[in-house]
Image (cartoon, rainbow, N blue to C red):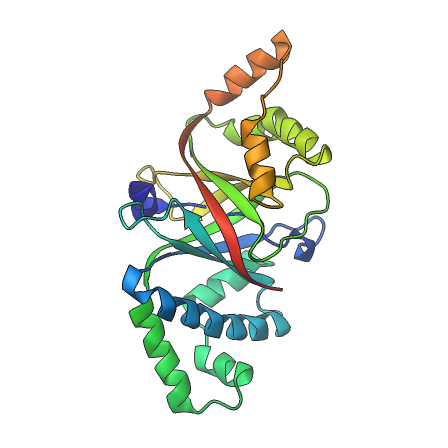
Length: 263
């Protein structure tokens, strides 16, 4: 996983799909954080501080939402330990935020009682508490339907990093695999499934081109799903699945736990 995150981790998830307007795509900015064990306490304080800034950004309608997730396994030799996800209603809004944002202005709005010195100290603490390992721009391609409510401290998700091998990969996910995931969602065995495409970084050198995200109410639901059998498939379905599997290389699977959420 470390290699994937280091080179071009392309990931998440639709977190808060209720904010997405029908017929419009959600764009996501994934930022993978590497945190040294000695800085864990400071890192939590930093992200709590930033959550206030993100609340102001939501209020100003510059973003749809923001989330903080822990990654598992998350050892120091397994890549990043944390992931922040920022949701945008358009690619333009996302690119504007990446290229330049008046962070101090937002901080003053979010924390009007704090002095410039106090805010500056928090920004300095931010730089020391963690290393931004990767930044990935994503577009939501497809997802299952149904209501799913995320809850901080409870919701978990699996992230599968995919490398597209054939041009019809996305069609295979939507036509072959999505119906099966939709059935599981309708049966209450999982919360949602989603397909994301990496916009940036891009090129033949990236380790992953897509992510499939599966959301679960909690660890209990995830464990139950993982231990259940796939079930019998008829010949037609079996052949379609085998053909679909040839369109991608399944690189790595990780679990995430939602820790903070701003909407």
